[in-house]
Image 1: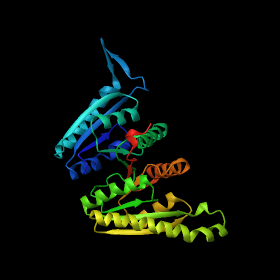
Image 2: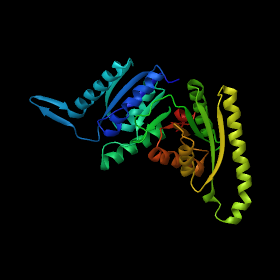
Image 3: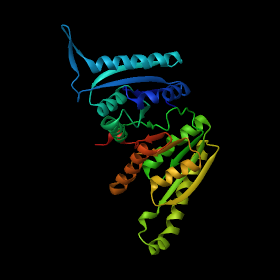
Image 4: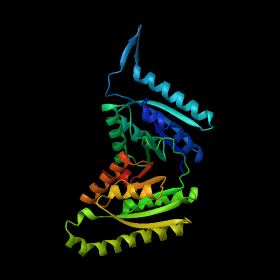
Length: 294
């Protein structure tokens, strides 16, 4: 399913910790692993050694990608390496397009303090800009190896949720996984018990229709094991995380934003909160038309 996987790497603990998971993923899909280091032009890294002017970040980057490629080759994984100067998120996105990448894999945490926060921000920026799926691995997910046996796909019935569902279906078919379809009703939007009484039944009915339609789509595509669930929670993120823990989900597959306007912003916020806090890998799927968006 994924033929060309991009692994942007630096020397942070987060990136180093997920290397084995990246190798396992590439091996499972018989993919070529592209190992990229971005020599961040936001940092002054030029120095002089004798009469020669060198870029310390580029030298460090070459060592990192070479070491990673060697480890991958020892596991029988074909690799391509690159060290490129530029802004980190923008360079990753450009490389994704020029190298025809199918999947990006990134950690959610980097070094420590400010640097850790910045790497997390980089992963979130890539999630907003990438034209291909992005798999994020947090500290608790490091060491996780595919195939994923239980794929959780939260859905709100939007076009973006449908794009995530399609990727989840493809993965479930390829790996014979259980597909867990979840719709979370956000009870914080009710505002009062009266509103809850007025809207709860209607929202539950709509949510049930959404997961039922998703189930029909999955079974028609060849997924053998599909579970549908409607939950209520004061937070969509908390509802997803609670279900993932109770159902022993291996990976959460989610879109980057929902419908339009405020809905789009809110679902984007849900996705970014999941990236930061989920204890399992999060596969972020962009909208189908992202490469044509302004």
